[in-house]
Structures are given as structure tokens and as C-alpha cells.
Image 1: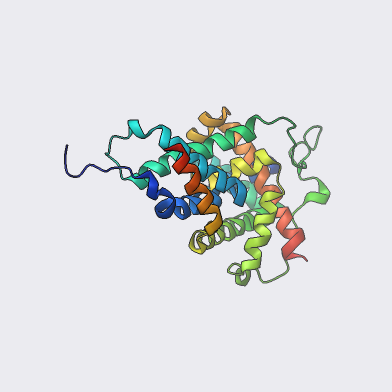
Image 2: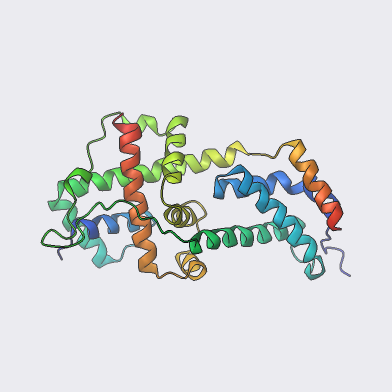
Length: 82
Length: 188
């Protein structure tokens, strides 16, 4: 049942993508119960997921575009290729 | 010919799809020039492949599928690039203490009120900087899995790595990101 901090934090990361088996999940929870440092890591790792999700939402909403000049060049290139 | 069949009109591609494709690409590669080149390459590849267009999908869907392929090719190029930089180790890799935290890498308490920072745009920028500071291979695998939502199997197949490799890379990337945010944001 015992796993190292490295192994436990890795399980913690895998859990952020939603794929722990029952055994893995037991191992992780046991470790988090006895190890304060990894508990902190786990909390911050979840926090990181939230930051990332928020950031993705924002980037997609922002809608980056090309400049008119860049698009002109592209149009020219395509005409040449036709 | 059925009436519902889609057709291609390359002369309107730039007007109709350049921004859409560009936005899709830049969200994934986070670099204006690279994203622009990928869009351009997509149009060229589209021109070349026009004959293979069956008209089953819309023009836009068809172009996006080409762009996705271009993005994966771009990732593969990074993957095969030499000079494999590693991230700093966070755990002892051998000896009695193998797998334990290295003292100076132990996570610190995050002092600032974290929850209220989440919607702060500057935190997003700091995060983006931290992702860019990762060794290229780490940031690539991290992006593919976390931002592009590729299936694990797909990433492994494209990059020719095992799933256990993949999780080691993602884990190291995240451990590094956590630390980078700690230093540059939460405990500044």
C-alpha cells in the first residue's frame, strides 16, 4: 500500500485527468493521509488545474486574428497556387 | 450529384477561414508566427488535396482536419529535435531516500488568497510564461494532453512514447509549473 512521495504526486497528477484505478486511488489517499507535504502538493495541483481551465476559456474567447496585411499576403500565395 | 454536397472555393478561404484557423492554431502553439505558418501550410495542403475532397464534410471541417494534422506534424518536429533538456529533479532519484522530496523543492504554503486570483488575467499570463519556460518536449506533451485534450493513446502513437513515459513527462511538467507559479506569483 505504501508509495513514495514521487509516486503519490504522480498519481495526484493522473487524477487531474480523471483516470485512477481503485487501487491507485487507495494508495494515493493513504499517502496523503500520512504525508502533509504531498497533501499540500495535491491541493496546489488541483489549483493549477483550475488556473489552466480558466486560462483556456479566456484564450478561446479572446479570438486572436491575423492582420489585414498578413491575410493579403496569404491570399496572394493562394492565387499563385491555384 | 447530390444537392447537399459541399464544394470548395479556395479564392475565399482567407476571408472565410483564416482567422478561425489562426485562432485554433494559436490556442495550441501559442506563437503568432508559427500559428500563421500552420494556417498557410494548411491552405497549401488544401489546394494540393482538392481532388480528394469528397464533399461529405463542410469546407471548414475539412480545413480544420488538415490543420490538426499540421499541428501534430509540428509537435513531432519538436519531439525529434535534439538536445533534450530535462526539468530540474524534485525527488531523490536514488539511495535510501529515493522518491522523497528534495528539501529545497518541497512545496511551500501559498500565501496569497488563491481562490480570488483565479480570474486574474495576469495569473493567466504568468501561467503561460511558466509553460513556455518548460523544456520544449515537456510543454508540448503537457499542451497536447491538457489544452488540446488529445487522447493518451493518440499522443503516445504520434510521439512514439509509452503511456508511462507520458505520465512521467506530464507529472514533471506540472511539478515544475507548480513551482514556477509559486516563485513568480503566489509567494512574490
